[in-house]
Image (tube, rainbow, N blue to C red; front, side, top):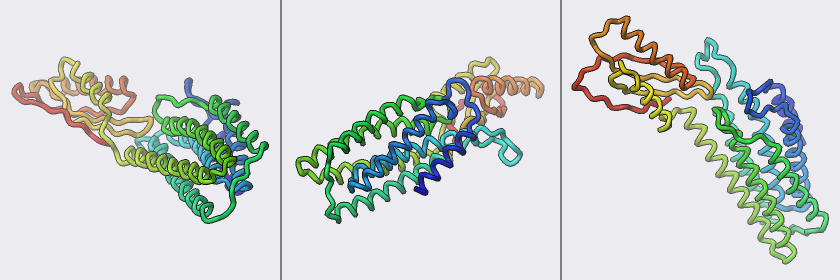
Length: 319
């Protein structure tokens, strides 16, 4: 109960943390969003309660899975709120990478949940308690499946804007959560024919999914925090834009630093070496302005003199 008290506190904090998301992005204050949160809380409590009463590992795993959806959904607006804070003196590039830190925290929580389920799985195998299905249990599980479908449709879809890592994760979680309930139905069907191995088997499958999702999210979040090369589309778009300017004879040493909602781009361009300082500066300023307008980033352009026989090779940068 202490865990769910903490979840409720996070729910209230998240509601205050996300004052208003721009058009096209789901707001935490919308009624459907709050209903989906309460629905996930109710589903999780019900599944965990039934799992504890019946000793079903599959129900305990499904309940833990639903609780993880609730936790991720609550942490999303908090992360978005912090990551959108304006840059300050100590953080000149803003707080965009906070979402990746939250992603890393969520991955650790998922892996920890998986370890807890492994303990329950081992305890279930060592025990003698077997699942005894009843009509009431069948009805409750079926109602939970219907409620999960409703909650999934009420939840905001994963967007394509920067900072939707947790949105995508929630969407994936919802899909597998419904499959977890199908697994519980399979366990109930098998229990009627004394196929008791199905319960720990389904529970183990959900546990393995926890480990996979946690490790996968942790690796992706770590890559963003450490720094990765720009994607091919972004790389090609930048070079195409820069080389389309008549005064630019070549470009190389592209560096893209990803700070979530903000990016910093550094690139070397080659121009006529006979131009004076004022003319060269005007070209650099124009390139920076174009890159800023196209990519919503802070661009820094370095100037190199161009020699007709010199070849340049674009180099991917990390950041």
